[in-house]
Length: 285
Image (cartoon, rainbow, N blue to C red; front, side):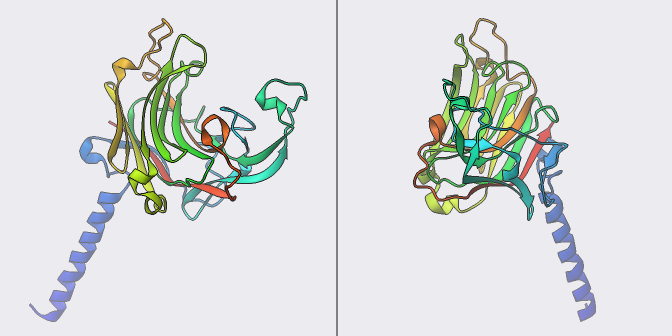
């Protein structure tokens, strides 16, 4: 074989190899061998605000007595990433009532801002493989999360799945259903400390969180490491109704919370801080 033919063969070999690798890594085909088909994704490959056909924003003080005021301004896409930024800044609370006993209205100002985006009313899914590649900041007081809520019912009777949650030095993997007491959940949970995962080196990198949700069970992973597996038979509301809130469609949320009932203190944290998301994908069989 002469040199020209050798070079031609090598060229087509490398092209074929590259194409094969690209196809293997493509979002649509990566889980094909497991029988999954891509049904929805956001790769965040735009510059500007997140896609309004997929996402809306939570606004104001929302839950858990958290410190941040949620607003649209703190979420945007750049360089192929969704950025959710926590800031230390003062925002007047338009719902302030001086004598109020409600934490949402008793604060004259918010001292921190952030964003929480959700697919509620736009996209929801029942069962499937949910995948998110992201990078979290584990500074004191931060509480990033990727999670779902059921479309019907009052929390927690609608069901909650925390596919990625972090606060106070640990990752959490949670599934919650309702109890006989209003606003009190029955939690199925596991945690993994950041030190155990790899400490600062682990934190400096992007990681892949995954949920496999079937008619039989819910399994939550980080970088293919199983964090928790819960049988669906145990996930019924303990309020006497025996309803199954995980046997209904759920919508997705991405947010960076701060402080509140679980997040921890913020006094020693320098802002701004970011929760960065490379992509979110949903596959179904």
